[in-house]
Image (tube, rainbow, N blue to C red; front, side, top):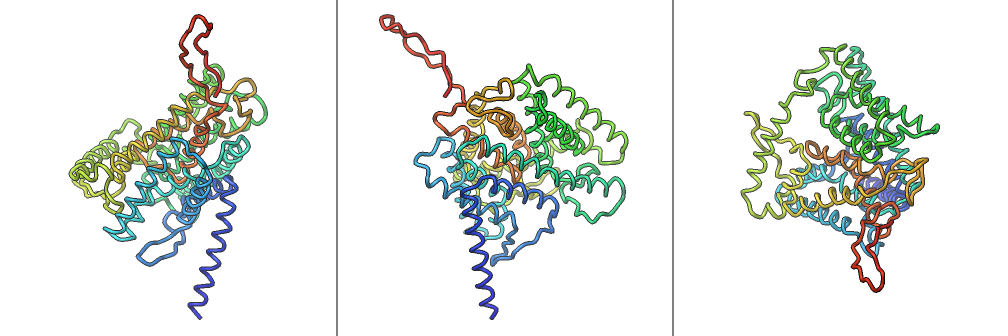
Length: 456
């Protein structure tokens, strides 16, 4: 009887997975809602999320199932593509090296340690492959942007509840974040703070536009900015400032004044909050000029690179997942991840994987930097106007990612940005990319002159 019930349960799960997979293949908005939903879900439940224990000691959670379905849907869609773009191929190279490291890790260390470390990459690679498989669409990208902002609402409510618990001494029964509780204001882990900062970046292009929607998004952006600065994550601050600087640099005439006012106002509120609650955190966590954390990380990075470089094979394909990140930093034994996405990629996929990651990230920024800023009314070449996640916002989002990766790994949702950017950069003839001037030999008799460029 037990075996029959187990078989029936597996059949129901399989049928439900196939049904969800079919929807994911057709609707990217559903995939975005699942990714952003499980991000908030994981932030709220922390370590108390329900799990399914499999043979080999592997504990499967909801987000593991979601990312596995996204990867399957993305690969199924890519099989229909007759020719992949160059950056898509580099992403698949990185994915293949990660799977190789996973297989080597399972064979060497067992299933549980290898899969546990592979979770550092499964959200990023699966979501990037999935969203890169969909052609760019103003309507689709705008819907995903709306879903992103909607998912930020429960995240802000979670942050508020934890602030009330810490600052007001009221026990609301909300689980405390294990890696975000070193001060009263740091109530969520770093990647969730960066999740809110990305939401701010979605609103920045609207800060100087006119119209009802622009005014609403400006107000939303100001509120989100206040939360970001109070969360007191310095890497998030630097990344957000860099992203805002990119937007202002690319559209100086319209965005400079209001952007500066909002940033200054957020800074004043932050200083006031820390003065009002002087005991809200430790000196190293609240002092923006403290370099203790950075020094600790640099020492750990040096030790990891030293151990990795001893084996010539690891230079090429990296260490298998499950090898751990053992190092002694300031007299203390550590085994947490390297807190650097570039370094972690080099450790697990070797030089080849590092090159693939750099080609994807830097290549996307280089291609999408040529996207022109919106014209009057917020309209963009070949795109239309008024939409969230328009092509012109991606250079700023990619710059924030490049900075974030210096001290953290991507959050569960950051593969969405990479995948959508890959889709924008992939088409051979994309009307939102400005073609660089081509040199044409002057022939005199035919009267040909060098081309001035145009729109590709």
